[in-house]
Image 1 (cartoon, rainbow, N blue to C red):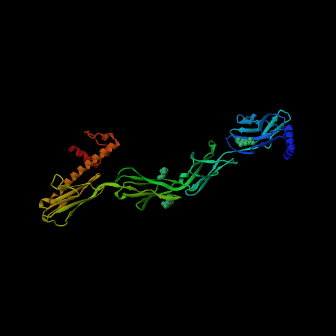
Image 2 (image 1 turned 135 degrees about the vertical axis):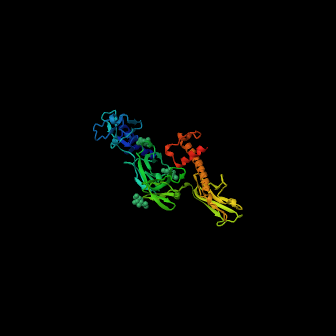
Image 3 (image 1 turned 60 degrees about the vertical axis):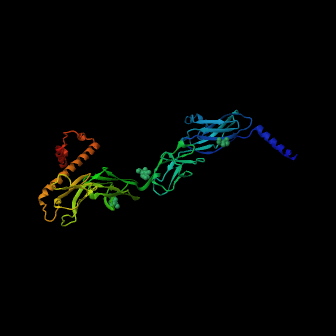
Length: 461
Ligand SMILES: *[C@@H]1O[C@H](CO)[C@@H](O)[C@H](O)[C@H]1NC(C)=O
Ligand SMILES: *[C@@H]1O[C@H](CO)[C@@H](O)[C@H](O)[C@H]1NC(C)=O
Ligand SMILES: *[C@@H]1O[C@H](CO)[C@@H](O)[C@H](O)[C@H]1NC(C)=O
């Protein structure tokens, strides 16, 4: 058979090679390895040796050209405990090198010895090892709205790496990662932070972190008011503007209504007046733009002022007609109570903003006065004459005014007491704490005229 005739010489040839051995050869799986600092490197390959010999020793030699005696690298103190050799019956060999360092960047060759003294082999060229760390490159600082690419740099090419990114230590899963780049399409202020990268499977060998700073116009512009709570006329109020910006805010402008009223982070109004009531806005500016806060309302409270009485109908009043007195005042909040007095009487004749006399007679004539009150105080008018033609009222002026005045003092005292009580509850001042106590002397610094009224009032009680 033809085929048998052809294959016989081939078979013979194979038998001869088997008997007298093949040549020495070493084949490495990879001749260049790029490894992450701190990782474990695996180098392997296969070898052949001349026939009729038994392999007695396989070890590795570092940089054989520089170490002519070709010593076993595992005996080197620099590698002690980090090296592991493996060989098997199918002539595979391998080297595990743990915790690689920059100084491990050498050429590594396998050395094979057999039972025949003159038969030794060094597999050259060997495997060249380079060691890299990961290093993040950022643009440093970008402006909101721009794009930014961050790069995870290595000094040699890792085999098939998958890069992972971290921001402030947390894995970033929602961003675009192209090979070793992190792509931020439209940077926002929230992208500012500290970035690091790693290779999947070697997360513990992540890079050191690098900062990405983002420039942006002011954000979260807000106004706070000190002191908080009610603003009484005459008190001092300070508005403070806060905002978040990079670079920091350069100008703050204060706007009342639509008029600019001041500059600076704070705006102080000492001795505030009712005219200072209104909407205030802070405008905060840096090189990248400006933003306004929401408007805050300043509502300056004050007791009634400009209390006045008008009489309707005006002019001469005819006996039997009806007359309406109207009390008006400027107050914030608006006057809550109006009380009417007539000279000669010991108690109020009426309440409410209007006081009407249906069918007026001579008995109704005289001086009338109105006391307007809100929770912050009270004010009275002077006596206003209501007269019928021919009935004089001038004689009673002093009495009428006096009556209204006493009532005003009474109101002031009531108000003062209730406010004091409120304050005591809030401030817990021991001197005022016990309202029921008979003799609580006023503190010296508090001898205002209002206080003098209170003392007088208390004695009457
Ligand atoms: C070296 O090791 C790799 C991974 O274990 C294996 O796939 C490969 O076949 C080995 N190469 C040789 C030449 O032994
Ligand atoms: C700014 O406002 C945003 C959204 O309103 C909020 O998430 C963020 O915490 C604020 N930043 C500061 C510093 O107040
Ligand atoms: C911003 O502040 C600077 C320096 O205080 C001042 O010169 C400039 O006029 C201000 N700009 C505006 C628009 O108020």
